Length: 282
Image (cartoon, rainbow, N blue to C red; front, side):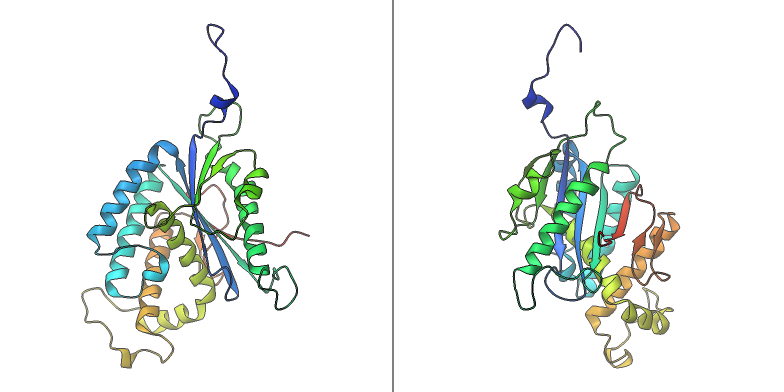
């Protein structure tokens, strides 16, 4: 500290980093997930502007995973994936996708209790923000103390956000936000949706890969009649996206597994795009 200057407690709590989050299928299906996009707070506004332009140029209103059901959606997803690779390579942002298996991690609460999905979701948010988040950007220059974070989750009024923040002293504030206004939340949604899909629909992906692995972009689309009965047009688009992402991630040596694990999984936690599987404690 120079010239006897003192740093106030308020100044020490100024957030240096931002995190944008969303969940996928938290109350339905065997596999559930949470996505997290983290970046220096100073990068949030310019990267959000980039995303708005990308979404608009793709003729989409949002780029959430559930919106990807057509060829147009797939092309927009390809643009997004390329954009993310560009930003993560430049160390402007990073992505974490946490998934869990309900069969291995049963929902809290007795059978028929509708609140147990939300209790489990709150537990996962507490784990993600309390245990995973502090390790992100830990090598950045922010002094001797852990960096302070501001969190922008997609709006979920049923969660006790103050309780989650209270368990994580590195969080300055949690601000539930509208994903249409915060495109970085859409990125979190897209990647956790991709992660959940890779586990829940791996058999569909394997079937598609066996039948459609010679498809080229300049060929006429396969007709619906030629697809397996359970592989719909929208499912095929998602299989194409999953395969595109995995192929490019592998070419970039990002340490992402898919076929050996029957779902996207990253073994090294310091990768800029990380797919982790929650392991029940105890």
